[in-house]
Amino acid sequence: MAATTHTVMNQPPPLVGYDVFASDAALTEGVTRYVAESRLDEVRQELGLLGRAAGSAHAQQWGEQANAHPPVLRSHDRYGHRIDEVEFHPAWHRLLGHAVSAGLTDAWSRPDGHLRRTAGFLVWTQAEAGHGCPLSMTHAAVPALRAEPELAAVWEPLLTSRIYDRELRPAAEKGGALAGMAMTEKQGGSDVRANTTRAEPLAAPGEYALTGHKWFCSAPMSDAFLVLAQAPGGLTCFLLPRVLPDGSRNAFRIERLKDKLGNRSNASAEVEFDGRTWVRRVGEEGRGVATIIEMVAATRLDCVTASAAVMRQAVAQALHHTAYREAFGGRLVDKPLMRNVLADLALESEAATTVALRLAAAYDGGTEQDRHFLRLAVPAAKYWVTKRCTPVVAEALECLGGNGYVEESGLPRLLREAPLNSIWEGAGNVQALDVLRALRREPEALNAFLTEIGTARGADHRLDRAIKGMLTELADLEGIEARARRLVERMALVLQGALLVRHAPPAVADAFCASRLGGDAGAAFGTLPHTLDLAAVVARARPVVDD
Image (cartoon, rainbow, N blue to C red; front, top):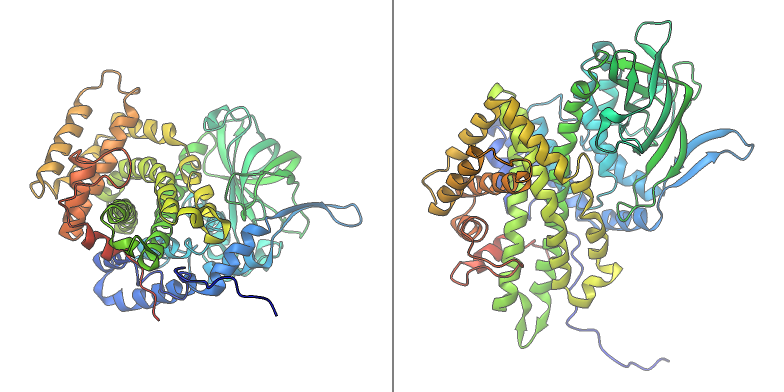
């Protein structure tokens, strides 16, 4: 019989068996704010079901397994036939199947669809972030395909289906489908106009053959892909099905899977088109960027949402740990300095969640004012929220001390995931330049943005000063490109501040405006003014687990 050398004590229980949706006050209040009252009970029930699944032991285990067993490329079968398939662990399929069945690829066919999907995406991403890529690509492909009604009639019902059909078959035989995207190339990166992939017209109208490569292909196991290539009339968008209508495989060669910093459960690939790759044109020749931009805008909102989800999960873990962990004669969460750190992290998380929901509600609004607002607000939020994710997760990890640096805590996986959304769908400079482009070309976008933040003017003097400073920046166009990041950061912070002043409890809005807009904080987390009601901020953000 082994001797007992110690007793395990002062170790927090795992954060498991809780409702990820119901325990997030910023999220639940945002849903109540934007969803029509007649549908509110239905939406809450739907999100609560998903929230309990996301907080379950099963979902957490699936996330661990999917990341411990990354996808594997199977280029050939046992007989030597080229198959170009990606093999995933069963846990990946369980995660993705649950997400599809919960409607996370369908924002287009129901009232409040974008708000419901964004809230659900924020909830379910906290179980595992990697499989969010195919969910996002599939959801975002719909508006681009609508540029070609004949294709949309075939593919939109499949992409918005709640059936997860993982087998590669012709579209006519599928109950549901996933979509990927292939835009960037080795020589161009974000400059997609430098693409060299060629599209040669075939005899049938709208049909082409591709020759070229893609340096990044998202979700290469998908049923179809939106691809940019140079047609005779210029850069054009195309739909590339993996399986042709006759059941044969399209010429789609997966050369290798990327070995990424994080996002390990998800496959990203380099692919080649050999001149026999059959595609259908989407939109007009030469209008490829204009056609695919709707897809890009939708995926950028998902980058904001996924970053908000990663932040929320990291902060929830830190709050949970410190609520149970005792040190120096009391609970960590009650120590003034730790409370300051936790409150600071909670502010960043709530601000990210609040802006993501506002963007989703604007998509549902669908008015010209909403469209103009989104034109500036999406790239500004994408720039700022995704950049805040990494420092938030790193600080949350430190709240767990050495325990947070151990893989079993889950925080290292979140930290590796944290930089991703700042890079995908256009890194920081791309977003900042996109904001400048909108300011120059679309004055209605600035008017809509100013109208949005103007609804909060007069409510907080620090917000008013920040708005005035932003307007001063906008009035001076000298050297504007070199100042683009500074300007976009200010725009994002002012938008977050305006939303929190209007909708968050006074303790949250006061702390945000004091630290983010009033300059009364240091460069690190945990430097909030001690006179603020930090206990209320922390209590609001803490996830509650039923005993």
